[in-house]
Length: 295
Image 1 (cartoon, rainbow, N blue to C red):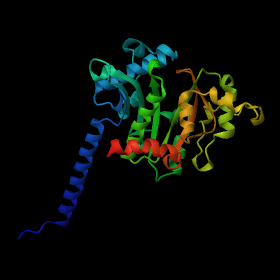
Image 2: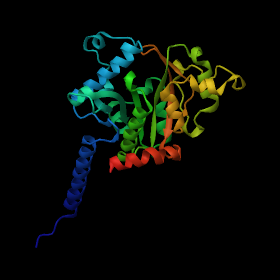
Image 3: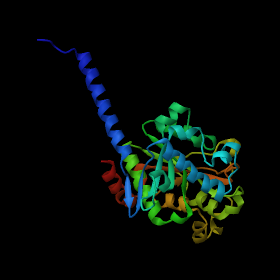
Image 4: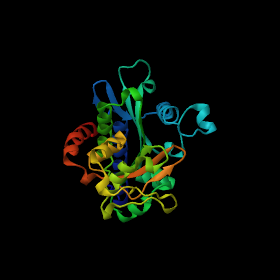
């Protein structure tokens, strides 16, 4: 009787587990991660869908909001950079529209997992904020960078935001993400134009010391532009972009300082969302859907 070598059994078991995990990942990436009415959210499946997401980004960031165009951007009318190749692209599709899937994309979010960022030399937001220092302080966590969020004007509704969050929750459950982070933006390049909203964030929404992250020194701009007693809370919150208000609702906190992005014409703040600290109300609301679609 032939006895299997322990080393061989270990190799076969590990290889088999890796194959099973890869097959499960392939299934996850091929299916819907959320659905509300005619809107469906899932990951991009091929280069054509990624290109279509880049075209949606171009329409919002360049045509609508006036970001600076390079020659390459102008020629192909796509917002693209070196990070697109290593990111997952979350898509919202209007399934009632005619034509192939890539023509139905009405919103997108770019997702960069820590392991992919490490292999590529870092996260996108490290050009503005000291994210690497934060990650070093939390070696047991798995970080996910959220970025390039945009939705076409006619689809900017609560329903679209909710279906996007269904997709994000399914994604963080599937990949066991511990911390979500990334930049969020105010339009324009003058922090003082957003003094009340930025000051509200500085006084009331800052991260705890354990999760603090600072704008890099060469680009640091203060958010504390008004004394706390001068802030009208209602008008400060009303002046915030919907994305930032959405982050705050689920319990996200804000890093130290803001950064002016001249290329995109924005004032950026940094969002930190440890998954365990997100409001239980939203974990129950979105997490149930995320678990269902991630299963």
